[in-house]
Length: 69
Image (tube, rainbow, N blue to C red; front, top):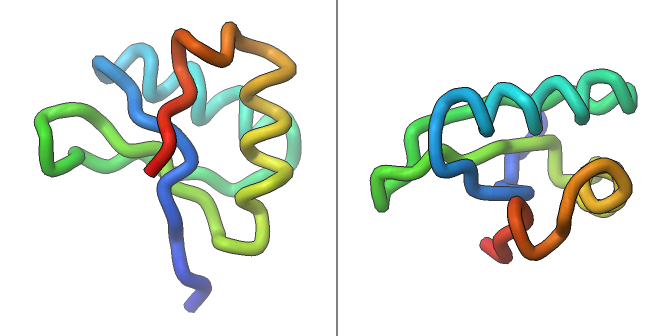
């Protein structure tokens, strides 16, 4: 099984699902899990991390959605 790493943090379920849809549309397998701080972590395979960040940044406001793990 491939190691999953956090690519972003979502403030709510709708935001997490939107980010997941962006990643899936870009051909990247992503999942959303409850985070430790009450937010939602968007996870991707470690080898997809760079491509996932680029996909999210291309289709969102980076300061709005992208959080460093």
